[in-house]
Amino acid sequence: MHRKASSWLAPVTLLGAIAVLIVSAALGAGCGSENDIAPITEVTGGADKDFMRVYTENVDFDEGTALGVNHDRAGELRLDLDMFVLDTPYLWAPLFQVNKVVRVDTVTGEMMDPVTLTFKGETCQNPSRTTVDIGYGVWMGCRGGGAGASDRKVIHLDKNGVVDQVFKAGWAARAVALDAFGHLWVGASFDGTVWEFDPQTGDCLRGETTADQVCRHPAICLRPDGHCGSVTRADPIDRADDGTFPYGAMVDQFGYLWIKGAGRNAAGALVHMLYRIDATHSGDGTADADHANHKLVGSFSVPADKCACTAMYGMTIDLRGDIWTGGSSCNDVKHFKNDGTFVGCYQSGGNSQGNGQSLTRGVAVDRDGNIWVADTNGYQGSLPQVGSVTQFDPNGRRLQTVLLESGDKKVYFTTGVGIDMYGNVWAMGSSSNYIIQFNPQNTEEKRAIDATSGMYTYSDMLGTSLRTVTTRQKVATWTAILDSRSSAPTWKSIEWAAKEPTDTSVSVNVRCASERDGLASLPWLPVDDNPDALPCDHERYLQLRVTFNAKGTAGSPSLQDLTVRWSAYVAN
Image (cartoon, rainbow, N blue to C red; front, side, top):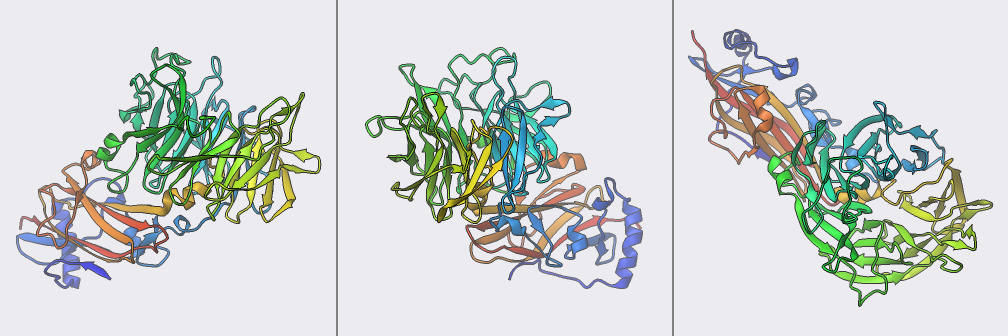
């Protein structure tokens, strides 16, 4: 048990409880929603009255806003269970040719009817990249298709397949990923920008302010010359240097965003790159200074003397934090350490016979650290060859190649591969309607699902990457606003009781303002052990933020109670 306490704790009496009604009338009923008017107890008498507010029961915690925490155990806040459990109930597959998406139940194989990606009259053009959130819904990038069909939307469906949210990012979203705080990151290939959104608040944290959207800070620019964004502010954007072409994105367990893209070298040649972006947060992800400090901190390419082909495509990150990418125009998979050091390239098992070389696209990692890569396999004459997926061990040794066919049901031009919670492999292609699933221990038995149209995707379509890598650093918050009901209170102290297992913590921050609406623009201030006074002056409103932090597979910290004390002058 970890307890932070003040130097005194006066008993609460029935008379004191009655007296607080009189004092509340003298101080005023306050403003805002009913949840802002918390039960307050007077503890001493005199002209200067002392008050306290105790949060300890479920009804108390319900007055605040919980993000990633719950009180399933009565009288305490804990991290949500599904932040700890690897569960992949659904696979989300975009039908890029018809602007729809399908959801497949990974246990039964049942498929929900395709959903048209329309939000308030606007349709997501050419959907492709996906990232599944903690709530099993999905974010999908709308990459558009050039002049007449360009797009800048990123669209969200809840776990039931209902389109419920949309953000406007840079043109042609070809990379989407979520971080441990639930923030959405978008890489736009036409204008070379990287955007950050907070789906909980609807805020654009990094981006370009437009007539229909305000962003707190500029978008992160991937181009070395700094010439990102729209040149003409027209549709479609003038892509003078062929853009940076983000083709994959993922946030590692250390809070860094990785994007596979491309850029021009000094000679003007297009070079495939891995971009590393500092997307870390010092607190719970709400501090505005964090967003301002997010920036590009590294770019890495495949050494020409190490691989005959230096191209890259889709990407994933393993449990060590190493990055693996498909080969794009190559029949291989590339391996980088988390610091950007190149490790090697490994020949895949795709069939490069006929008139089309096999190209590797999507990449996934299973729970044993094995790497799976999608092999396109090209064409034999005018007919496409059956696609495949190849498995590598964590050191790049090729283990097996599995053809994606079940009877007459086949996958062609494989682009996407994913691993569910049971270790089953799921794969799909852009030139056939079938999704094929199999167990790596029994590759002869396969399940084929007709998705009704081709699927062009090679990102996290099951949520496995988010749950096994990105959220290994689990962070959640509970916030509440306390109305002192005085125009000039003296804020005294906070005490709280928390349990903090190894590698977990509970921390408290506060901020104060004379007007409720002024709180959001203020920085959070940490509360030290046994403070003599809270870091506030005489503002009426105090906002609390409790941050719950757990590393790796650590258990959950918990908060049992929290008490705020202050005093205010009351005229006789």
